[in-house]
Length: 181
Image (tube, rainbow, N blue to C red; front, side, top):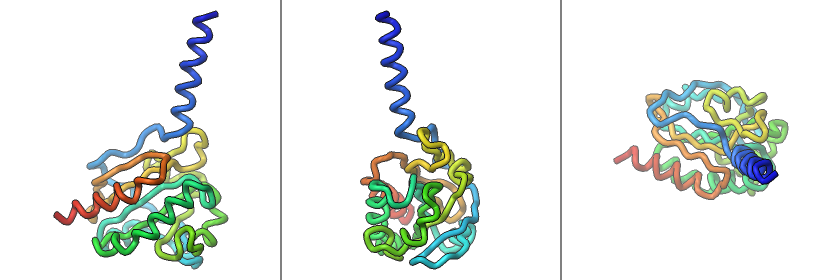
C-alpha cells in the first residue's frame, strides 16, 4: 500500500509539472520555422508573414495560451508598455495563440492588453505552436508561454519558456539589445 501511495504521489507531481509547462521548445541556433497566419493589429485583420517581418530586422515571436486570460492579459500589456524599446532596437513583436482566436480582434485593440501597438496572430489547431515545440501540455490544442528572439537570418538566438508572464519582456528585450553589441 505504501508503494502505491508513493507511486501515486510521484505520478501526481509529474502530471502537475507537465500540466504547467511545455514539453520542449526549439533550441538556440535552430532555424525558426517560417509561418503565415491571420492576424490583427488594432482590430484590423491582415495576413502576418514571418519572412516579411524578418526582412525588417529581428522578430520576437511570443506564444501565449489564450486571449483574455489573466497571465496572457498581463503579458500582452507588458509587451505593449515596452514596444517602443523593441522598436528602438529595430525589432518587431508578434504574439501568437491557439486559444480563443475568435477574441483576437478585440484583444489587439484593448489598452489593457495590446493597445493596438503590436499584432497578434491566430493559430487554430496550434499548427504553428507545434512547429515551434510550444504546446501547453495540459491543453495540447493551445500554445504554451514561450518566447523566441529570431535574428534577421532566421536563426533562433534566444528562447524563454515559463508560464509566469512577468519576465518574457525583459528576457526578449535583453536578447534583442545583446544582438546589437
